[in-house]
Image 1 (cartoon, one colour):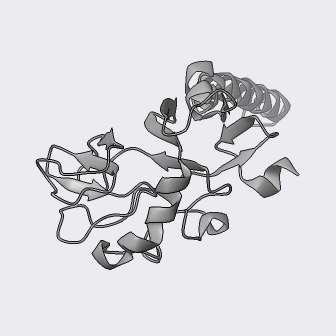
Image 2: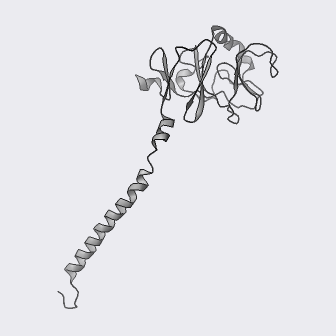
Image 3: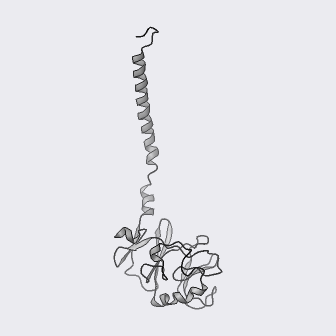
Length: 198
């Protein structure tokens, strides 16, 4: 004990003990906060890849699935639909999809890994409405020379069967193509790029 009546050893012990208890308390208090950063199982499921069996789809059929809260359309195109694609180029705003959101591996005329199947985010690039698929070729109330495709009745945007936007409509770009690949000849997986399945 020192001459001024203060026990320095005891003071050091109390300061050290208080610091340790405070650090442990802060660590325990931080655990729930850090755990809140981890997405819930429901949130993880929403962002998870979606597998789709396309083997039973008929030609001309559109199948809709949900991925990350978005409606994804899978269209099994007919040979006639594919043959029409180059004929529409003069009527389209971005026929080569240079200004559109899509993976590089679908940078082709059909905007697809396999020309037969179009995989596209169904939300209009204008305000996010979901266009209708109108496959019938022929005069429609909104287009006398309709060649089939997607029509958004909200603001009259039109897209062909490759999701490419027509000129003079409100939608600024082609429909978005999400990342996707094939697990096998019958199964398509949305949310996984082809290089990730190899």
